[in-house]
Length: 609
Image 1 (cartoon, rainbow, N blue to C red):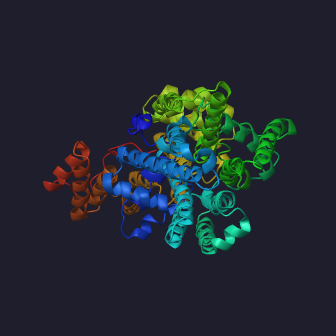
Image 2: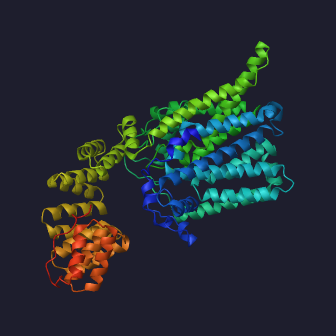
Image 3: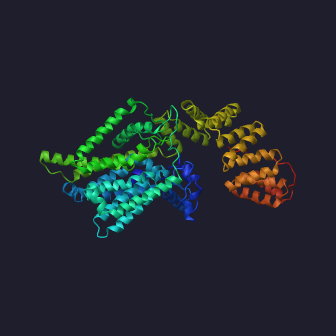
């Protein structure tokens, strides 16, 4: 699809790192239970086993080749568009609406599907890889509804209703918003099929038992993997559930505006203003209330309008009213399915407008007129989507875009600073981390990032000050303990470094660099057995860590364990053929020149951050 042709090579960003790059559960497909047991700890796939399994399939086919992940996302999006087309076409040609729209049902459904597919508001869900959670939930919700629509006029409806139940279960395993699917189906049944809730439940009792049972799957998943960031804190500045709901009035109004005029689009709304006073939210609440009231009035004659309004607000409800998500007050991906209601309303409104014009002027509209209008709209939206995808071309482009549009976002500054840091642009990184500290003085990660840059610039006192502040704000911050230990080691304060490394591995036993650094520090004190244990721990976590193989090989050489030493030195050379210290050590060992008890040379690499 042209609108997303330039999205296929965009890098993994932000949550992709934890959900894909650092996700051990997608590294193999068998036993399948592993792939269906995604990590928690804040991962975007925590409690979403169906999405995690899809990532495992991606990894099995292409490792971490990002093209394949994007291709699957785009395929899911296209399948969802086809399901939407089927639902809209069958609904417009069904018994309730056929007299008004039946003759034009196919081209109207085409218009809805095309405009929804190419709308730039969809870019976050499609181009940001881990937001596959939204794509899969959306696809399964649409398939659930489509199966019900097909089953309603099928001679063997139970097959379609079984498919709807299976799809609902898969959706529950993709994202929690799927909780609204049974309600959406019941409302659709009431408006377009049965005519009343009682008739719907009577005619399709088995279907609703199955859909309700799918809720049990969601309850089990949420109980086992509660979403991090969903609990609110207390205190004078806390985002309580009430404050969160108040804030959502403005957020939902923003979603509506972006649905109609999708600019500017932003991947991170961390700095969205919190509505704490009536003046902050009452205007938006009044506007949304007026829209809801108008929809209710119109739905008395046109029930489908009420269904569209319910679709929009119900699908947003889990994230915009029911569950306060403090870490992310607003997110454009949440509009993925709600946008369909807006598109349907716009398309049917334009259709009604064209018919009104033709009746007024007394001439028959040529079939080409709606096609020209649809083509113009689709081209405009697709072009905007192509331009938006350019912002995802690199991690640097993503965060530069966010900072340009939301300059007071500390999280955007942090991510831009981290990108600069990884690219070796230290002054640019320092500027962004310093700005993040200014915006959010209580942000421990901002202090940590600034400490990293200062340490790299050998401003050890400044680095220690910011690491210490980060630890004051979050005492169990393993990375900060490890990095503080690195600075102490560089100052020659070995015992202080050992204390910090020890804290880091106690807090996070899987902190590979902390184990490695602790091994270096212990080895420098001649504690060879303890150092060897730390290197071995580092290799347990990361078996292909060439530096750890080298240091363990050198340590074992000093301890006289030559065969084990040779094995690790050979591994170091195999993993890093240009790592000359490892090659030299292996050559020495092979010439039998390595003498047990010889002094261990300086580390081949500096302590790892």
